[in-house]
Image 1 (tube, helix red, strand yellow):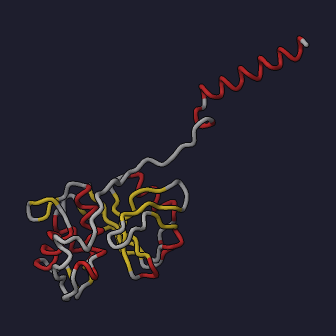
Image 2: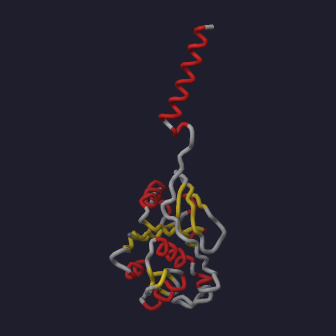
Image 3: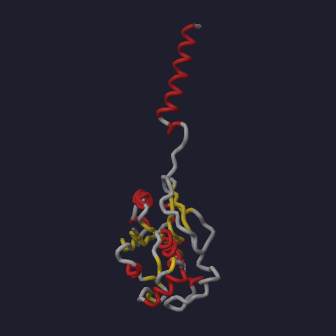
Amino acid sequence: MFKKMITTIALSAAVMTAAVVTPALVAPQTAEAAFNAPLFKQSNSTWGSDLMGGGDTLSKSGCTVSSVAMALKHKGITVSGSAADPGKLNTWLKANSGYSGNLLVWGSVANLNSSKISFTGRYTSGSSLSAATLRSYLDAGNKAIIANVRSGAHWVLLTDHNGGTVFNVNDPGYTTTTHNYSDFVGYGVYTIN
């Protein structure tokens, strides 16, 4: 009986020590949100009917512009002296060679504020950036990742991750809030300081 009591006390002490010294054993660790951007919907009545460079409306084809505007707003970048939103960014892009038809000229966005924005690159396959790279970019807090989803027909802003292959997104056109790494078919990446 005495031996059983000593064993119970020793096990209790070990469990208590583990809980104090290594809290990871008690509570799961989650990724910290590094890119908490506002959600702009491309169909918002304030700008949804605005025409893009090739004549489509933001409501119809403005997912890329809306995603970039979310990132700019999050980082405090202004457009023509006002807080960034899809309408203001669209107007600026049309006046500054920011479109090729209705498609964003990715590098043009850096001209808004070249001391704070640089275009890191356009990646045209889903596997061109690993899930680990995407997570590290989000954790750094200064990389805006615009991901191409829905078989290449739509763009969203990545905002967070689960530590694995699930990414939280701000989706300007749908109610989707997460995508798996396997959903991505390309990326546009900006460094915004």
